Amino acid sequence: MKILWMLICCLSISACGTDNDPADLCQPNPCTETDRTLCVVEGEAYRCDCVAGSHLEDDTCVDDDPIDPCLPNPCTETDRTLCVVEGEAYRCDCVAGTHLAGSTCVDDDPIDPCLPNPCTETNRTLCVVEADGYRCDCVAGTHLQDDTCVDDEPIDPCLPNPCTETNRTLCVVEGESYRCDCVAGTHLQDDTCVEDDPIDPCLPNPCTDTNRTLCVVEGESYRCDCVAGTHLQDDTCLADDPTDPCLPNPCTEILRTRCRQDGEGGYECWCDVDYHDDDGLCCPAYAENVADQCQCIATHIDPDDSGECIVRCAESSIEGLNGYCPADQVCVQGICIANVCVDVLCPEHAACVVRGDVGECQCDTPYHMSEDLCCLQNASNVEEVCTCDPGYVADAAGDCQAEPDNPCEPNPCQDLGWHRNLCVPDSSAEGYTCDCNVGYQDQSGQCVLTQWDACPDGLSCQEGYCLPADLSAEQCLVDADCREFDVNAPTTCNADAAGGICRGCFYDSDCPDNSQCNPYGTCANLCDDDNDCPYGRCYSAVGYCGQKICVSDQDCFQSTVCVDADGDGSGQCHRIPCQ
Figure 1 (cartoon, one colour):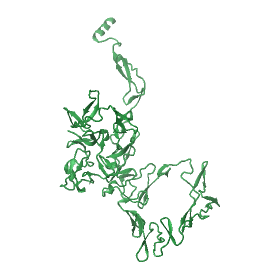
Figure 2 (cartoon, helix red, strand yellow):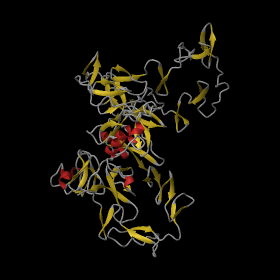
Figure 3 (cartoon, helix red, strand yellow):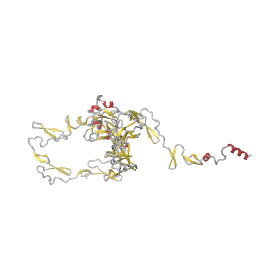
Figure 4 (cartoon, one colour):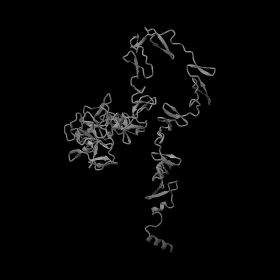
């Protein structure tokens, strides 16, 4: 009976026993290692995989990175919707323009310069209100050193210096305590630091020039002054002119030492050079007398209290377009924006420039970007080293020169025209091929401008070009954009150029926005450096922004491409054509 039952079983089931059923390899589960208990059959064997929420790392299943606790945003309280990740948790911060008072975000006080706190430098976030603004002090446990707040040394009793008595400020560590010693040039007498008896540098008198024998002690040195009845002129003491009231100079007031005869036998004391008189007070340029103190006018600032007023960053004046911004910001066409270049590391021969809200590395002239390295012409990045391209060899100066047998020097493709001037060495009988120039592609034997079927992320096809939604940094797209201030202006838009360029101007009023008509008849922004030029670079010799020279697309940014129309090896950055 038992044999009959087994026969029936074998006839009704595709296989008998467990040897032929691969699924049975995982029953019972042979995978018992922590978080690696997922048994998967593979042919006649099996493997142990990590369970959900973990992944394999160095043959061990470890937890996946935690889910972002700020997605979706859990912060819904009024004005406190800024979610900040803190490990596996989060905190809710106040939005811009508000600050935390108790447990509620309230509007900033517009008359309090410390709300919101402008002091963001590391360890220097203590904002102190002053009559004319604010200052940023070091937080507790730190002190100022070389204009940076550094941690106090808790084991050093001399930091900060506890010795403040006159001439006794030399702190000397003694174990866990300290003592206060006299400074150089003084000594201790009756528990007071008094000045040492200096050697008199005027004995014997070193001043022997004619009429200049008056020796005056200055610290440990001396100076030679003119004797009475004479005055210094061109480093020589000459006899005073009894008819000149300005000899010797009677004007000794600080910043008012220029003597001028008044025409009536008397004299007037004028402010020194670079200073002007404002209601009886000598003030520097762009400063005025306010309550008997020189203060910078509203459009200028003296950020380091040096006595020099410099223009603020503002759109209201030509000078303000490149004016002053705080240390963590840069002035871009009259607006202070965050200096996004602070943490950007650029290769040698490159500098970071601000492009919108991104910091990008731009190679110095005549270098070009090649896979994150700045290389000279005819060289490329090979294993993180700039190496001469095939057919070129480095000379003593490091420049890549054509080898004698280089079939592309001189360029045999130069006069072909039709944008097919790029010579590429190959193994053909001629030894080279003439390819389409950078920015062009072969289409049925013709080199035509490369057009993109789909624009890069963040751009859309508008008027035949890939452009961002915000066109505020663009100069023009159509001719009408160039005629913002005069509809009859002769300027037209070169829409191919990166950012668009208005050309054909005669006056500044022929140009849009803050651009000026440069000597070459194109509308360009004034600039001090490349940060002022959204799409090009600053040509400091003329002080205007211009188009950027490129070798490849790597030299262009802000979603532009390199176009070399004549194939001479250097093109210009253009907008991306689209269809």
